[in-house]
Length: 261
Length: 253
Ligand SMILES: Nc1ncnc2c1ncn2[C@@H]1O[C@H](COP(=O)(O)OP(=O)(O)OP(=O)(O)O)[C@@H](O)[C@H]1O
Ligand SMILES: [Mg+2]
Image 1 (tube, chains in turn green, brown):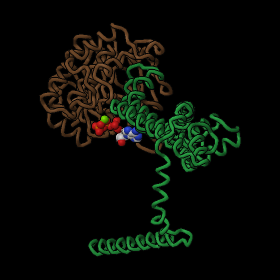
Image 2: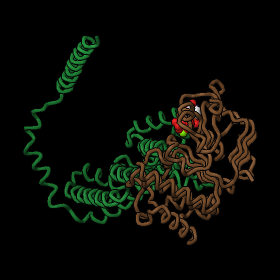
Image 3: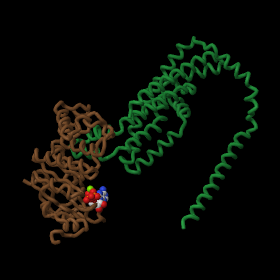
Image 4: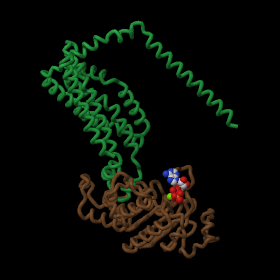
């Protein structure tokens, strides 16, 4: 009885996937058909690219001190921004957990977090610079705001994964509310919370490298300055420092993450 | 002195559903070992939750270990730590090791704020260690619970309950997921413990034959009511069959 209906379902889904691919193909053709986009230029500019790269070597090491100082500022922005987003995420993470709050609280909170995630960091940073002026402060605020969209969601999900039985067992054993949280709930999620926080810190650090471009502090400001004035040998030095930092963070993070299970 | 005295108890999970509990009168003397039996959904777990002070919204009078229970609020810590509960699903913190889980049984004995650092007194550690040794798991003290078998978890749950030093132990289907041999070990263990401490034991089970040698009394439930209450010897095959068929009063059968 159900065989013909299944067959119908397969045909319909085959047709559906044909439509999907046709739409994808149409979009790709439309995107590439822009008259101002001359792909041939990519081929012609070979020599230009070689010359551009040539001007990056040897890197001008005289900017190393600038690089370290501005990197330190970027690091500070990332650290304080992460502290800010942790504080916000604890609040919103609890409000957004469906096993803790009624639907009229956690549904709008989750929607708000999705909206925050949807706003690009660079846009938030530009608005913050407009609001509080140039420097590290708007960078910190932008990171704290932007990162909360993701971190609070992770915190909510961790809280939602708490099994109620072990917590109830501690209630039965005479544990107070704080004790139940500390010994029944927290150990269930601590590794996840720490891993998520570390992951977000790593992202914050990488994303804060570009904040200087809009005047929100850090190494990005100098990269942009030297690019604009065609001092590519200095840009090269800064780029190397950035790469070194990212590799270092990655290594430290991997080592830490392996211990969180 | 009665460990449990219930009078005119009734309870329903929702106002519209049938009563999950309806117990006109029930007394259990201190030190008695009682088996709760009855078909799935008969109300065994509900009754045990009531005795553990975790059920809300019931009617009637319930006196457990000299404490009048209040259907609207959680009983005080000092009372809760006297009633040990062994959960059917073990209810252990999977990411903590055995010793830490057993230490959690001590929480009712220590100051809520002093414990926040996670530091327990040497005496608490000693008690936890002894409890683990009593269930034969001292060697695994540092292993995480998520790497244990079901039978081992059950013993950890028992050890946590022991560390609590309760005057009454409520065990909800403590042997349901154990093989016959482990089940016998666990039953002997529970029995030895309550005898040694003079504690009251109430355990629920779907295996009456297996637990009969370990208890003084059988209470059978159906649809929230007590349909049989007597010695293990009086529970013959005919009556057992009647209990699981849902007879309203097995004594008359
Ligand atoms: N949290 C709950 N909400 C609503 N109804 C419930 C809840 N817990 C139990 N019930 C209902 O109450 C009745 C008694 O359930 P209870 O868990 O006490 O039975 P039980 O005798 O322990 O069964 P089992 O042998 O399967 O563990 C059942 O009809 C069950 O469906
Ligand atoms: Mg049950």
